[in-house]
Length: 499
Image 1 (cartoon, rainbow, N blue to C red):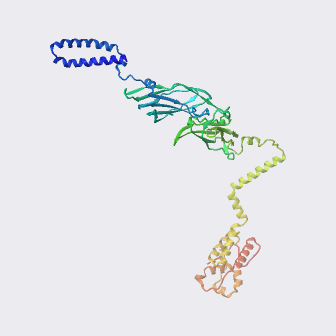
Image 2 (cartoon, rainbow, N blue to C red; image 1 turned 135 degrees about the vertical axis):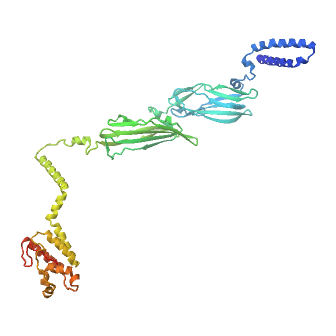
Image 3 (cartoon, one colour; image 1 turned 60 degrees about the vertical axis):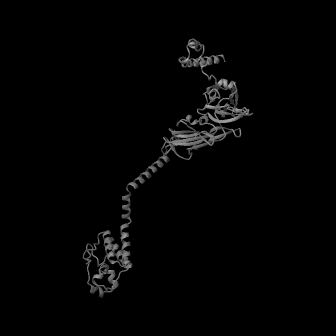
């Protein structure tokens, strides 16, 4: 208070000096000497007063944050989550502390919490949530700012929370804006671990956890050396950040003949209507290097359900599959093919028979065109088809086509009969006078030729040939070609004159 009074006196003296300079030109001579003496005194006294005053003494507003706290005009309170709860927080569970700053006036620049650390606890970055409010204290409305900070203890035991520094800026009634640092008091809290979690190294503490597996092994599918399959495992948990979801323990790394490529895990956090959700995505690619039978054991993810306070398990099912060499047999099957085999007479003939059968089948495939041609020759396939067409044309009274088909048929049989070689022809008068039945049997070609061109010569000719006549004629030709019959109407090596 003395320093403040001294400062005020010096200020008053300075004002008087300024006033003297204004008054001096207008004062009377008698008072001039007195005023001059006063001015000299002020000039000597002012440096002495300034020299005996500090910089802080010259500042009118020397009030600090500590003074406001001491005067009860500023309050800082740290609250633990289990202050009003009987149950002890467990390892891995979100531990939320709150720091409330309250002033009877209002905040100028607000308040911020300085970074701090706690051994064996994870403090995620940017996880401080601040809310503004007010409350009535002793009939006065106080402004408040509350900071919520989440810790994740990873070890059971006693934790000591140090002094936490909070930057505060408030607007006072008489001293303007006061800024500074206020510290919370150190506190301790206990973190426990349920008996059900004893011996379990990694687990999730959450109110809800889901497990999704994409890319399952198929025991019935055939895998070959060099094939690969990718399995993606996604874990989603409520009320915890993704960084608190433990890494999946993949035991496939120890399988001989399998290479595992583990992509870096993807972790991300989401918030929906006040509920935070952490997601961890892990992807494994299995590359099959050797043939054989493989089994990936079951994997268990432990989850402590904070709603029911019970331990639950999520299962990644076991997988079994077989990898082949890519040929007809597996490695073991190939090595067992000739196991116990003895070469004797019986086995020799079996092998020889198998070789002969394979050779014959190969020849049949290679010579299939030649074999087909031989079959047609032996079975007279072409002659049978011509004979069938000839009978059809006779039945349909299409004598011109029948004559052409007959010529092809006569050319196909042995060339002892040439249909164009010196066969007697008779005129139409002789056809009318002779017996029709005998005429058709002995002069079949002439009748056929007459019927084929009847439209141009005798449109009203009453002659026809039946299928029976055609069959009898072809049978006679077959007998002649084989030398079993002789007829006076056909002479070998003679041509039939059709026109």
